[in-house]
Image (tube, rainbow over all chains, first blue to last red; front, side, top):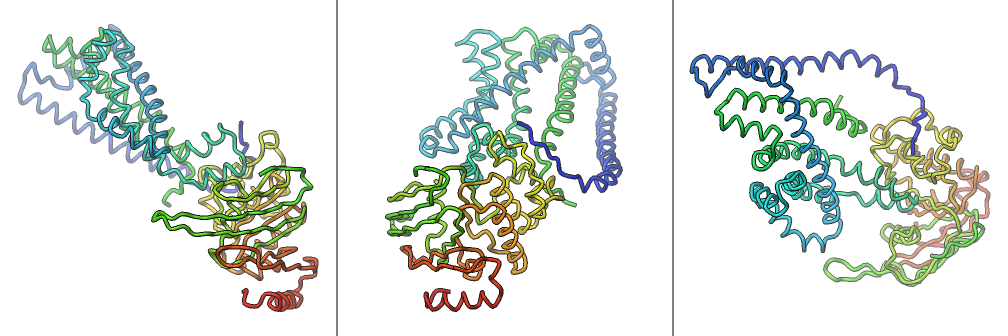
Length: 275
Length: 243
């Protein structure tokens, strides 16, 4: 279904005028971030020159390793493997966690019964879940992704449960009176109300998941950033460890900038912006 | 609830509705409440605040099923204008109206309706950008857009200043006259009831039941300020003590 917003855009001109100032306003924060990161790099470089050691390479050496790994194709192969696992675990955790969370938030008796389970799983260390998953299901991809998802699901459940508790019954009643179909209810009543909670769970989720994925790779996979870091740890090659870490952090930063933030801006476009 | 033909009246026969508070105290809100709204008739339920008017509407809207008794709605779509506008803040004015429409009517031309209600320039705004009066107009547009068989209004003009409320009442009559729909409006404002309805059903305080019915024989276009005063006087003669 599409809804055509055929109305006249009476504010069109005003929006056109403000666009110029918007891009100028967006330039300043970007400049600040650049200078800030350059400062950190400079500090790192100074420290590495003051205490020269194989265990503490400067930014130049790390950059060399990064170029070497990129040229051989290793970097992209391992980044891709890790990114795939992050995406798969994220999807599984968000979908399963949201469904469970919304159910628990909607049915108080189910919540009272299952709440101890949620607390238990929240407090089982990630490492235990990973080790058990490998023992029970073997050293395979499904066990790896499942273990990461199980680590994240209780967090999603807790956040989405709060979201379901905060649902406004008036919108559901309006939808009942006007006989909204199930899909319309999901798309226009439920998801917009849960959006802030979904965003919170996603944000904390991506950061947590990629760190756990590295552990999973270290313990039982033969590719990915975690595997490479394990390898270079055995070779005591700190420059390579830092190169892989920084490369993956950069990838996550790009995802945040080009995917997460625009989606969030679109989802909250209806909120009144402070003038 | 059993929907029958579109020409059927709205028939209400609620034996009892009781609320149980968290402390276990039960309060009877409605007792032997029965009345009828004929097809195409505009009826007001008038009663003091807290006398169970909103409860009655919630039962008729199917939002509250914990009651004894029965009611019968005309067949067809139901529309409601709630006390709060209850617009979806994350959808534009136009989307809010269109979402209430059945799928096959979603792309229908709504220009005339938006025009009558003075909303033409606001179709692409979000509800947060509207005043309360404008948001109420959108709620009216949503209710009339679906061309309902029966329309329920729950004090749709409370907490508006007198001028805006008067303007909205005229708009309501404009859209309603274009397509007279069986309408039941809940209000505690006698002047409003006298200006809008064909009949006024006066409710007694809790537990609520029908105290009496006031028939306004006068067509709406003849309800001048003087005629309204006469109506008010004869209403007070019939129902002394009801304000």
